[in-house]
Amino acid sequence: MHMANELLSAPVAAGTVAIAAGAVGYICHKARDIVTSDSFALMGVMGAFVFAAQMVNFQLPLMPGTSGHLVGAVLLAIILGPVAGAIVLTSVIIVQCLIFQDGGLLALGCNIINMAIVPCFLGRWIYDVAAGSQSGKGRTYAASVIACVVAVGAGAILVVIEAGLSGVVVVPVRTFMVTMIGIHVVIGLMEGVITAGVLLYLREVHARVFGEWALQSRGTGRKALYVTLAVVSLVVGAGLSLVASDRPDGLEWSYADRPDQPGFEKVVSNDSAIVAAVDKAQSKYSPLPDYSIRSESDTTKQTGESVRAGWTSFAGVLGSGVTMLVVWLSGAAVKRRNGSG
Image 1 (cartoon, rainbow, N blue to C red):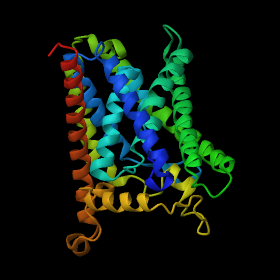
Image 2 (image 1 turned 180 degrees about the vertical axis):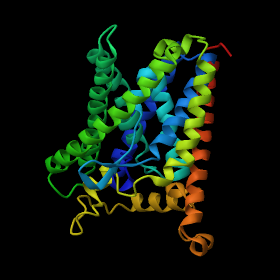
Image 3 (image 1 turned 90 degrees about the vertical axis):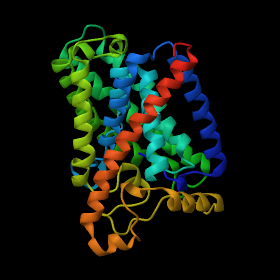
């Protein structure tokens, strides 16, 4: 659900960057009472895991023309709490944008709001309400599915609102809204199933590190969990990313690209010179655009898909490692401001 530059006007982009910056600053201020030295490892490996998982697009059931991927906001909010979860997912989104051109540079503020801040806090609240206290496994996993559907749906609604305020939607905004909500309900259900599966593993195998309280705990299974998540991140980023669906994701399918409908016309139009210039610069300077080597490379032309596959695996490993580093640096900065470093 990463927004591209073309979905925004320059004023809306600037406004959302300012809102996101203020929100992240406030969250980091709140994190001073939550994040400690013991938090860094868990936050880092969870960031690496979510980065890798977002590289794996899965084809949606009964919808062969589109795909979805894990956002991870609800998963992070349940395990780490919404404050730490939002910091981790914000780090993921920044790495994706600046290194891999996944999400527009102008849309960075929107993507942080839509995918990290709102879903983490809203999703955790919905989960707490639906799961209740001391709930059984069934209710816990049902609550995670409900939370994912609501959180992903809220992000989709915000995308439509931001594009509508930008004046780039050429069809009735209500039409775009219905399409976005419909497709992202399906994606939310799929994310809920994945989230419930991860929670099942953690609850059964690493019960002592399950839940927000784990940030302050020195459970005996913590090191095993860190190693497991690190290995899974490498396997997913370097391996499963190679078999990810090449279908457009739910947002792209909703407004720009429908392979199953050759006559489909884009529902946005943006002739902003600023947007065009930012798009050009981002495409030129992103080290690994679209998680691969540049298509115009002579090497790629000569050796074909095998080279691109190798670069995709490299991008998965590199991105996971950089995300882990960014999360750790963010945590260290918060800890230092707290006067405990």
